[in-house]
Image (cartoon, rainbow, N blue to C red; front, top):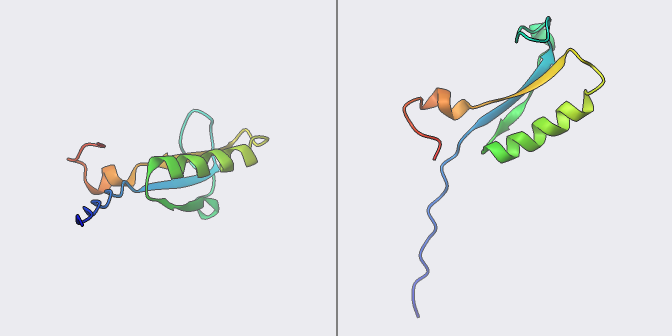
Length: 83
């Protein structure tokens, strides 16, 4: 019998999904920081993007509402690549 090789755990590339109403459409300045929707932290971009898309679609009728995906892993380890 051969021993099964253990898979290396994938590196977490943390992403934050955040949203709220903006003061002006072109600028990222929230109207009310107390009302900012901190949706959650996700282990990879694909998971964060899926949640971002869902939240954005739920608020499509509000032109001032925007959701964003923040690349937390870039802030935590700015010298590392996204590979």
